[in-house]
Amino acid sequence: LFTECEHICIVACGTAMHAGLVAQALVKSILHMHIEVQMASEFMYSDPVIDEKTLVIAVSQSGETIDTLEAMKYAKNRGAKCLAIINVKGSSIARESDYVLYTNAGPEIAVASTKAYTTQLAVFYLIVARMAHSRGVFDDAQTQSFVRELQRTPEVMKKVLERRRDIHVVAKKVLGAKDLFMIGRGLDYSILLEGSLKLKEVSYIHSEAYASGELKHGPIALITQDTPVVATVTQEKLMSKELSNIKEVKSRGADVVVFIKESIVGDLAKEYEIFTLPDMQDEFMVLPASVALQLLAYYVSSDKGFDVDKPRNLAKVVTVE
Ligand code: M6R
Image (cartoon, rainbow, N blue to C red):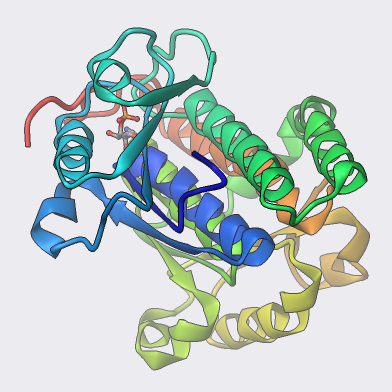
C-alpha cells in the first residue's frame, strides 16, 4: 500500500483535517510525493482526481462523521485504496475502510478534540517513517532516529503541562478580545489553524489563523490595539521572516503573544509576551505547540466562566451533512 501509491489524498473534517495538514507538510518535505488535503464536506463536489494509484486516508476521532464516511465511499467507488485513522473501534468509517490504524487515545468525552488530535499526529509521523523507509527515502538509521525523536513526545508534552501556569498568564492577554489573529508560516500556520479552531470553539472569541506572509494582502487592515495576535515561531528556517511579520503587527498597536521554540528565543522576551516551547527537531515542534495552544484555549474559556467540555451549538459526533 505505502510503496505502490503515487498520490495521497487526505479527507477529514475540523480538527482531524488539521492533523491532515501537518501530514501534508511532512509528506511533501520528506517523501516529495503528491498529496492533498480535502475537507470531506467538499470532496465530492470538487471533482477529485483519484484512481487505483491513489491512497485515500480518512481521519476521524469518532469514525462516524458522515461527511468523511461519504467521501471515503466515493473514493472507494473510483478505485482508490482507503486507509482510516480512527479512534473509536469498530465505528462506521473503520468498518468501511480497506485498512484501519487506531489512535488508541481512549474515550474522548470533551467536544473539543485534544488527545484525538495529538494521537492523529503521532500516527501520521509513524506513517511517514514507514513510507520513507519502504520507499527508500530513509535508511534504517534515519528511520530509527526519526522514530526516536517521536518517542520524546511524552517527555516534551509533560514539560509544557508543567509550565501551564505561564500559559495561564499569557491567556490573560487575549481574554478580553472580541477578535484575534493567529499568525505563522509553514508548519506554524498548520498548527495555528487548529489552535484557532480550539479557541473559537471553547471561548467564543472570533479568531482567524493567517499565514503571516498573507497578512499584508488584506487582513492587516484589521489589526489595531484591540486585536491581539498570537504567533508561533518554531521553524528555524522561517524565523527571520516570521519575526518581521510580528514586528509589522506590533507596530500597528497589537498586543503580541509569541509561542517560540526555546533554543531560538534569544532576547525576544524583552519585546513580547513569550511562552517558550521545549525543543524538538523542527518537523516535530507541532507536538509541544499543539498542547500549548490547547491550554491557551482552555484557560481563556475557563477564565471566562464557560464549560470547556461542552461548548454551545456543538455536538461531539456530527452525523448530518
Ligand atoms: O469525529 P471526527 O474526528 O470525524 O470529527 C471531526 C470534527 O467534527 C471535529 O474534529 C470537530 O472539529 C471538533 N469539535 C474539533 O474540536
